[in-house]
Structures are given as C-alpha cells and as structure tokens.
Amino acid sequence: MQRLRAIFHLGVKELRSLRRDPVMIGLIVWAFSLAIYTAANGVPQDLRNASVAVVDQDRSQLSTRIRQALLPPQFKPPVLIDFDEIDAGMDSGRYTFVLVFPPRFEADVLAGNRPSLLLEIDATASMQAGIGRAYITRIVAQEIAGYLNIDGGAPPVDLTVRIDFNPNLESAWFTSVMTLIQNVTMLSIVLTGAAFIREREHGTIEHLLVMPLTPMQIMLAKVWASGLVILIAVAVSLWVVIERLLAVEVAGSVPLFLAGTALYLLFSTSLGIFLATLARSMPQFGLLFILVALPMNMLSGGNTPIESQPETLQTLMQAVPSAHYVAFAQAILYRGAGFEAVWPQFAATLGIAGLFFAFAAARFRRSIAAMG
Image 1 (cartoon, rainbow, N blue to C red):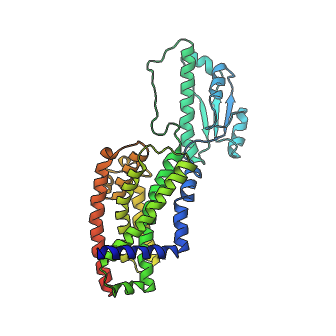
Image 2 (image 1 turned 120 degrees about the vertical axis):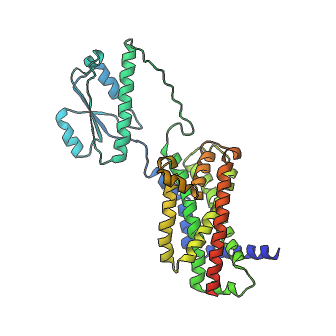
Image 3 (image 1 turned 60 degrees about the vertical axis):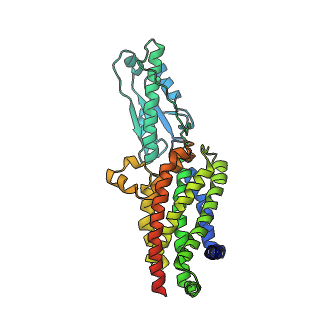
C-alpha cells in the first residue's frame, strides 16, 4: 500500500508539473481539437465542387442527359463552351474537366458503333483529377445504359449496391478518427519523454533518487499520469469534436474503445520513456521521435490498409501495437464491433505492451543507476 501511495503522489506531481507547462498544454489542446477538425475539413479527400465544361457537338437527348447528370455537390453546374475554348479554359485553370461529345454521338450509340468521348483533365489538382475521372466515367456509363434501357435494351445484371458504415462516403468520417488515433501515439510519446528529459535537465531527477523510491515507481507514476491526461483528452475530443462538431456517427461502444486506448497507452508511454533514456536532450529526443513514431503511424493502417503493404511489412507490423490499435478502433467506432470481435487485438496489444514495458523499465533502471 505504501508503494501504491508513493506512485499516486508521484503521478500527482507529474500532473502539477504539466499544469505549469503552458506550451505542452497548448499542444495537447490543439492536437485533440483543431488538428482533428482541420484534418477532417481542411483537405477533403472526396470530390467537391469540381469545375466542368462541356463541348456538345451533338446536341442530342443523350448528350444533354449526361451533362445534366453532373450534379452538385461533386460538380459545379457544367458550362457549355466551344471546342476552340478548351485550351484557354484549361490553361487559366477555370475548368478541371472538359467533356467533349462528338457529332452523331447519340446516333452512333444507338447503332452500336461504340463512339469515343474525349475527357480533358487538369491533373495539377491530382486528387480531384483521379477521383473525378472515375466519377465521370461511371456517370457516362450509367446514363448510356439507362438511355438504352428506355429504348428496350435490358441490362444482363441488376446490381444493387449498399454502402455500410459511411453511406455518404464522407472522407471526414475516416480522417477525423484516424487523426485522433495518430495523435494519441504522438502526444503520449512526447508527453512522457519530455517529462523525463525535463526532470533530468532541471536536476529534479536527483531529488527523486535520494528518496526511498524505486525506478519502477518513478516510471509507473509517469505512465499513469501521462496516460490519464491523454485518455481524458481522447474522450473529450471524441465527444465534442468528432461526434458534435463533425457529426460523425460512432457506431460502437465508446467505453470499450477507451479501454483499448488505455491498453495501448501502456505501450506508447513506455516507448516515450524508452526514447528519453536514449536521448541526451530534447533535440535528440525529437529526432528519435521522427525516426520511430512517424513511420509507426504511417504503417499502422491509418493511412493505407495493412493488406496493401508488402508481406514483410505486414508481418513486421503485427509486432507493433499501433497496428492492433488501429484495427480494433476502426472495428469498434465504425462497425460497432463488441469485445467478442476485438478481443484478439486487445490481447495482442496488452501482451506486446507488457513486454515492451518490462524492456523499457529495465532500460530506465539502468539509466537511473548511471545518473546516481
């Protein structure tokens, strides 16, 4: 009981030290509020208000039907231009897409001659260009199929599409949650690592060494205090920013997600302390952070699916808790999974985090002994 009381009071000391650090508090507030909001709304990954021009040399019912199918919010109302206006409009950036219908387009479609359409794309807006090309191609195909069906041609397959978990394909739903998860990793590492380095630079770590405290108690105090701050920030951000401001529908249990986050914080806070024992100053810690945390975030499945990575990386990332954290966070928050579905990821996170905590504790003990 005496040891637990010492760990508790040391953790309270860490919280008081954080309260006197306005820069770190500002970083935490920004990372779990404005950073998530701007990531979700600042750089949308879906198509919005793309400018389209149409050169209609056919002036038929079919070409008009396709033009009218280019609707907001993906596209602005199409502008009818002449063929010789294409270059000037594309060069000035007025149009991202220009769709050209050749003469006798409808007649050739009805005759089964498979006429060609010209789609000019301004690829300087690379994200809109790639997504918009797919949109326009699909719209043209759908409208031609519908037009032929009106005239008596029946499609061979009736395809019914149902979109689950994100029916409107809003990129903000994915970006906001993934930014929250990535910020959990980054802030927990920075918070614990900076706390240890700050104590070492200010000489307060020597004061702890002359007290009847063990290195394990000092490390546990930093872990629980930093983890508690991040866990509260996650809960508030999830409720205020993601669910209220961004109107993202959280399908699963928030307490279950927070419980998994607490397991993951055991690993990330231990990683912050481990990196701090390797660094001699905050600049060195920053360099180590870039080399470790950023690749870990990029490869954990938050940016691209694990399945799309090379097999060697897929196998390697199974030993990193961040990959399991992203997997069960997506399952819980997006798909409404319960504990019976995510317990393997929970178990893997806890097992790897426990092993790394023991490894980091051994390194921390050696570092403390060298300072004494």
